[in-house]
Image 1 (spheres, rainbow, N blue to C red):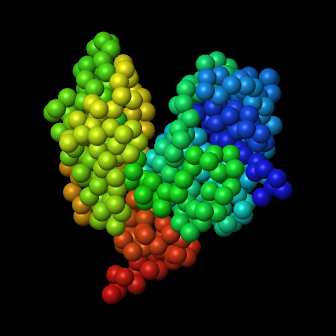
Image 2: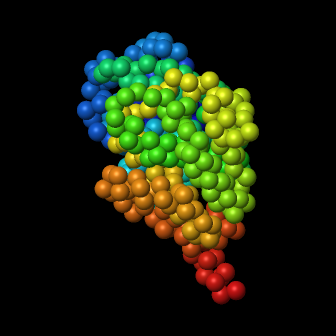
Amino acid sequence: MSAEKPVFCVVGAGHGGIAMAGHLSLLGFEVRLLNRTAERLLAIQTEGGIDVTGEVEGFGRVAVATDRAEEALPGADVVMVVVPATGHRAVAELCAPHLKSGQIVVLNPGRTFGALEFHQVVRGLGCKDDVMIAETQTFLYASRVTGPGQVKVFRVKNHIPLAAIRAHRIPECLKVVRQAYPQFVPGDNVFKTSFNNIGAVFHPALMILNTGWIEDADDFEFYFQGGSPSVTAVLEKLDAERVAVAAELGIEAMSARQWLYFAYDAAGKTLRDAMRANAGYRGITAPHQTQMRYLTEDVPCSLVPMSSLGKQLAVPTPVMDSLIALASAMHDRDYRAEGRTMEKMGLDTLSVKQLRLLAIGELPEGETEEVAEEEEEQ
């Protein structure tokens, strides 16, 4: 750790990464910016920083803006990964050779099992250093790039759960990152942050069940008009499947209705009532195409991992599976094959006990296969 303030490396130069890098600099921290392609960095390299407007105002200087991990990562205390969840594996592969003991990696956000995937990839590539890997439940900023090296911050959220693999190290992680972001609060463990990924409930189902309207080019209110009685009946069942998979793992996931009350003070006897009571959803119009992150990210990196774990734990997820199949058919892709599965992460042979031990850091590295064999013999 640096003698004074931690040094941050932000990975990702999209809407969120640019906002985070600029804001961190304005907060007085040294910032490096790493992007997998160089083109998005040209204006920032030329100007020496990022012009930030909106809820945050000023010019945030960036010490290093590069597409080379070996230039950005050495000396960084905290690596803030701000890329779509579909890019987490590629970022882990990029960073693994350059991560060192004492560094903290935070996925903003992890979606579902992002920290677990990152951990498995980094370890699989031979990184044995004591790197702390964490994830947030949702993203801190609502922001949009407005031009080369320019970003507008519409909102900075005030309450973001964060959890680390090795759950006992969450206080240690928060002690560092809260120097910049007091908004981060303890998230219990990485399964809790993953299962409370409520976008997995709202985004794909609302998109798929309103596809005709979305592609018609007429504006409609996504959550209000799109959340018709029949559509929200599907959302309720999808939400129940998510909660059931979490419960089989011993995790009490917040229902979507509870989350609306927690996040927005929006109450209702049904999920639809709570959605319509949420003033924060009013005026949000639907996208005009289905090729966007509510499907391309939330299906493979939110629904697929939940469904995959459900299968492993013998918890039926028929609505979830149907939405994955429909999204795959709509886009002519196999989201289940592309997505974040337990098999791909090398976790498909683990029992509930082993998974929970892995999340809290009591399962030693390399022990998963050995323990699995012992349990089969018993």
